[in-house]
Image (cartoon, rainbow, N blue to C red):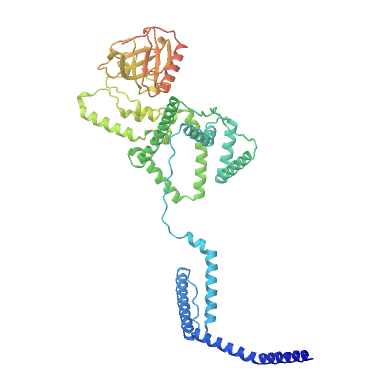
Length: 528
């Protein structure tokens, strides 16, 4: 009983304590919240926050001013636009920001669309790039030569076909082409016909590229066999290859220089007779173009081109004498001198003036190079000049007057005669010029002082027993630069060495030698 009473009293006390705690809990919470609020007020400073806010506002205003300046500069660089209406001061900041956003978007869109084209018109300094030069290589050299031949083949084939049309190589083809062209020129269709032929040629090339086998040519094409490239060349083969390329480049540059120098001299009145003809033709063409209508001029030019190409050129090529008399462009072009010929003419004129009137004698100066025939190249004109101050050709070698050097060696080949039968150094090697006539092979020594000197050498072609290409020094690369000629009067063959044009000289001498053998019997040789 007593224990139950004690339990009841303990429970009543705990309940009273709980009720007191629950009643005082809101009060304690309120006190804690007030303490926290007080602490927050002490920690935070409203003035500092206001200052920071003002700073941010000033920064924003500065950024807006800078953006406006940038936009103004861009608008000045861009094409002028219609002026915008000034906003009333009543507009608020939000409207201003929206207009700036829209304007920036519009500028961005315009720059994305048209900025690429505007950038193309900006002036920039040109960058100079220096290409790296490839080192000299024999393999690369041969490959470039083959590439040049392959690249020039279509052009050469086209020119050969045009020449065949003009020469009436195929009578039926040239007749059909002449009729078609003259009919087109008569009706004023010459230019459309040429354009149609160009389109047709491109169409045929397209079919050929697609695998069609189409071959049409007036003149049959000649393909030279291509040698397979050698991987490893010896030193002598490389040296010979360089010599061959250098010789071809020399000949090509010489021909190009001749053409350019003749054109320059034609326009610079170096030879007034030729330039005067061109001057008169230009005046006639100018007056005609001012008076006649262009349709009539085109008709006349088309007819003249057809007659000139198909008839006049054919007659001139078939009759060289007729061409030399009446072909004015051909005559003017051949009469035009090159710069080396002009220099030699002036030197010859000065030497004649200095020699005096009392020394008048038949002298053939170097100025005669201007009358060299068309078949002789520039290298032959400049590299084979010889002295004829000792007299006429037949007088120097005591030959009949009908004996003259062939056209291919009219000025001789410079060489040295090696007579291995002689022991004296002065007789063993002689420098001079080599000539070939219809019946004789003549060597003029440069040390001979009079006509019919004993140092000169005359060999009848019929006396030659053997003629071969010869290599004087076997240690040098290449096939040599000499010609060996054996006769019954010499124990050892005579050698004409140090000849730059050895192959050409050998071909001319051997051809004339075989021609003589087929017509006459060999007598003995004579030595002067």
